Image (cartoon, rainbow, N blue to C red; front, side, top):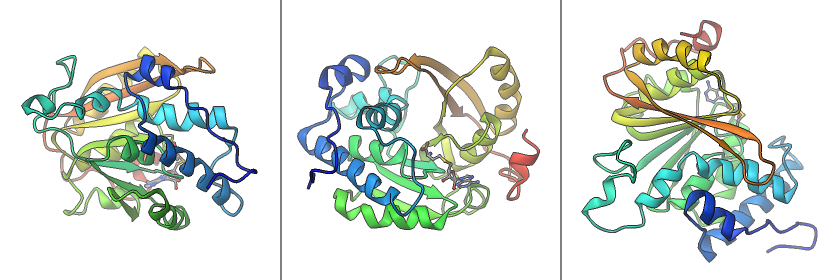
Length: 264
Ligand code: SAH
């Protein structure tokens, strides 16, 4: 499977354990390595990612994707009535999150690593670029991932369609647009009580202030903002966690292109 031209990903079990209190099983490690190989192959035809070095791929694509759902990685471990409760008591879910959606997934981040790590959840990967979704559809069988669905479309459109709107427990979004646009793309898709996870590089207090009003208009509230450094290159990252606390007004998301041209 791993021919001589494809480097191996680092495994770094201690780093997974120390940073996320989680480690891939042997099966998951094989899936992550295969994902790396398939993306490197796909990169020859499609412009999927500039991150091809094994250490960098591990950190910026795999570790970063899973850091956003760190609290949920531990939830699935127990098989009893406590499963719905997250460790720190602040981000409780009732019922436990099961349906995830990744908006603007590109080459499958963060959605595919999340689907590998949380194999009892379903993850819907959405992208407006048909070629990227076609690539993902082609690699899914090779990854033996049965809990992933794909959808070509724009967040503004699917957020208005009843089969998707208010249908998800968790909506993830990384490197798609500014935070208020990400909030407008994700919150309509969530069930009441659901969680939007916005992956960011830099983040400032002023941005929090600016985002608060937009999130409120959409029926959400900022529940937490986590700052962390990545374990290998020590780069600064943030994850914003928005909780849906009220129904999103029907006018959101606005028509295609409006959220980015006139952010809330
Ligand atoms: N989330 C991936 C890819 C980021 S690139 C990662 O972090 O690596 C941004 C992706 O979002 C592109 O693939 C683009 O096609 C998609 N995208 C941009 N606007 C979108 C929209 N309104 N709806 C759906 N996908 C969108």
